[in-house]
Image (cartoon, rainbow, N blue to C red):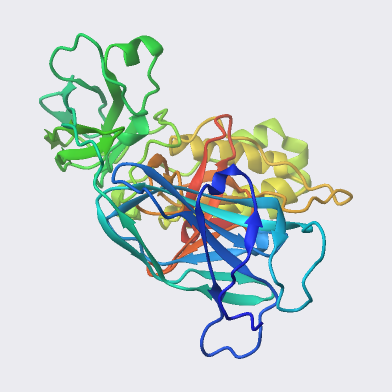
Length: 458
């Protein structure tokens, strides 16, 4: 039976499948030769109601998840992508293989790659999906478009509406000053409603400002506090947050707008030199720094030389070349590239301990603290899918590889990270963006998905 025809078999899977539908996976029309793997699309198709969660799974006949790339079609406003998971799974396959005769007896167990898309169904109607494109080293396959019907909830009840208010908002701020504001429930409650985690309340940071998201204590959460932010303006532009509304757990949450005027200091500086601002507190869209904007000065080489005078004397010419290269990038506004140069030589050069001192001082000047030092590679030890070190440019970190996904945090320019697996990437079609999962190379170890274009390898 030709592979591009409909597959009518049944997968002996876990209870996750429920009443799943199996769709065919067909090759692109222009491709005549058969592809050496199969793709099955499975999902519950009955009793779907607005407000419920729904999982769509792509089973790919390929044993290595890091070699499977999924190009997803654009998703409509009828659904919200909560997260995407990909990994290996052993399945019992009872399907007529187009390459062999029917297998007698018990179906064999095979290792496949499963990619799950977990959605929230936002509204009733006919939900249409265009083709997913699945790519492996053996070629690519496009699944058939399909539709499912989302019904109105059988029991419609009035959705609770919870309003919040900003507390501690200052009448005005100056450049470099900070203020802590708190977002908490407005009004009186006999019993506090169940609030989503603080990530749902995090706003988009306006250009020219730094937000540090302060962890909440259990007591604070029990009093209805949803978010606590330390604000630091970098430019003399008003700090403005728009009003937001979102739904969670069948409730509506309303976050009010906020506006704080910002004035200049006597001598304007974009950020206080040496300010202890965490790695995740910078704004994504802060304008690129240029020499005319009075950036923090690049560290001197004197401190490092005074600590390791003999080592510096031995490698003086090389150390000065590395230092001058990094300094030139820094002063031209490329602080991330400058830190990449320092970290690469900290790891690879015989005088790396000297470069490490300069690198730490440069990070502290940008407000990046608590980072791990570089370790020299062991030539006798290699590990498959070893995390690859990199520096990132300013960017928002998402829980899933999608711009519509929840924002976990924000990386500031120059944050060191480890790319968990360069091959385990997600590409969203229609948006022209490739994502990679990273973990911060520091004591916090925060992880999430960022656009690949924000990564500088070294």
